[in-house]
Every structure is written in structure tokens, then in C-alpha cells.
Image (tube, rainbow, N blue to C red; front, top):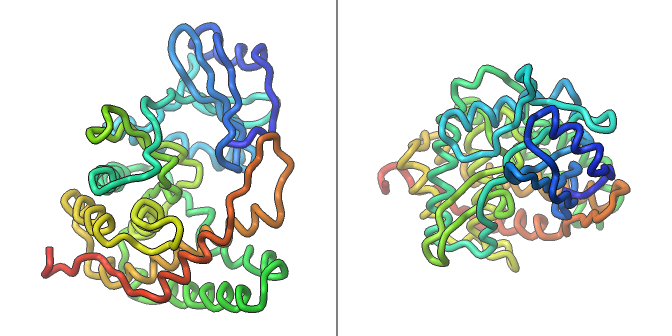
Amino acid sequence: MAVFTQVSAAQVQVLMDRLQLGTITDLRGITAGIENTNYFVSTERGDYVLTLFERLSFEQLPFYLRLMKHLAGRGIPVPDPQADGSGEILHRVQGKPAAVVNKLRGGHQLAPDLFHCEQVGAMLARMHLAGRDFPLSQPNLRGLAWWSDTVPVVLPFLTPEQAELLSSELAFQQQLAASQSYAELPRGPIHADLFRDNVMFEGLPGREQLSGFFDFYFAGVDTFLFDIAVCLNDWCIDLASGRLDEARAQAFVQAYERERPLSGAEHRLMPALLRAAALRFWVSRLWDYHLPREASLLKPHDPTHFERVLRERLASAWHALAPQER
């Protein structure tokens, strides 16, 4: 993520010593992202990622870190938070909450095909199933309540047409969330931000295997369908236009359903949740773009991308395979 807090090798070595992870041989700030401070840390024992949390509090963080620990214990390939001698996985660096996780192998697949989408869909379903008995609960902090608070803040930066679109979509999502159909959607811990750059693959081109999901710091308890919609809006679209690629989208959903079949309510509300997922990221990118924080290496994302995606979802009614078609 962007580097908001500069740390020295000596400061990080203190933590690595406490975790018994060896002597640092390399320390590099990570440029991608906009939420936390992240560094790659290499020692003679292995490669790790150090995260200093810039917004999340000591009270909020056990949910995320314990969820990762829980999923790792269920065989889901996610970063495993490293514990000190007393079993603590939440640490402190420069007065800020911090964590160290193992670095996943492989690299990003930024131009996914059917094969990649199938793997992500299947693993997402396995992750949802593995998280059903996770004992902690915390809402999706970038869910409807956050949208409702943030939209009025960003409206002054928009054209009248954009402001009308944003306001009307928020009203639609508020009405949807109060409906009985929405209440019927299966729920549990979700990733909520599983974009192409939060998944790793390794292996030869054309035969890459999914090696992990990471960056769980937007996770929360929400509908599984919202997680699916976030993925479809990134993994299965033409980035230039925002249009869904139906072949990739069908491959993703079919692979997901082989692990966890969708309910009737999930099939019915797929178009609405695709809109919700587009709205969520349009709002957050507007906020980051127009109300930026100071950070070394910070590169806010273009908010107009998800405006295009939302307009495309409103113009089409793509849905998952109906039960009789499966």
C-alpha cells in the first residue's frame, strides 16, 4: 500500500526479533494501494509483509487478523499473521497497530481468462464456506452506512448529471437493503475487495495456479453475493468500457456454484448487487481522489472507471445462470 509512515530497518528489526523471524536483509516500501503503509521485509528465514494500519484501530483489527488465521487453518491460501511468544498477532510500530504476514508466492494476473476466473470463483466459494464458523463478527465498514455518510461529502465535486446518478443509486440501494429479498441473502465473512491485484497466481503461462488471496483489511460480515459482485465487476469485465464479459462471468459463477450453489434470492438480486458493488467503489474512489491524504508514493485510482461500470450495470440486466440452466 502507499507509504504514509516511514520506518527504519532498526525499528522493524525490533519487531522481527520479537517474532523470531531472523535478521532483515531487505526492506522496501510497497507503492500499490491507498489505505495502509506496507513494506516487503526479507530475512534469512523468508519473505514477509509488514503492515502499519493508518485507519483501522486496535479494537477493529482482531477481526481481520483472526479471520486470516482462521482461513489459513482451514486450508484457504491467505497470508498467515505471525505471532510472538505469547501468541499475539497484533503488534505496534511507531505507536500504530501493525502486523507481519508471510508473503504469498507468485504474481498478479491482470489480464485474466476463463481459467483464471474459474479458479477465483471456486476459491471464493471455498473461502465463504470456510468462514461460516468464524466466531468474530464485524460489519462491512465500507457498506451501506458508509456510502450514506460519504455520498453527501463528495457530491459537491460532481457535475449535476453525476450527482443525480450517485444520489439515485444510493436511494435504490437503501430501499433494496430494507427489503425481504435482501434479508434472505446468505451472509458471512467476506473479503469485499478481491480485485485482480489482491490475488496471486504461480506457474508457467497458460497453466498458472491460484496461490493466494490477500489484503483482507476491507473484510466484514456481509452478503456473499456482494463479494461475488465485486469480483465480477473486476475479473470479468472489459476495463476500457466497464462491460461484463459474459463468458468469463459465466465461468466464474459456474465454478463458484460447484462449491456453493447460489440461492434463489441470490440469483434474483445479482443485477442489483452488481450495481451495489459498482457504487461502493465509485464512492470510495471519489473520496480518495477529491479528499486525499498525504502519503509518500500515493497514487489514487481514477473514480470515473466505476462510474462507467455503474452506468453499464444500469443499462444491462446480466444475471447469473438461472437454477434451471445449471
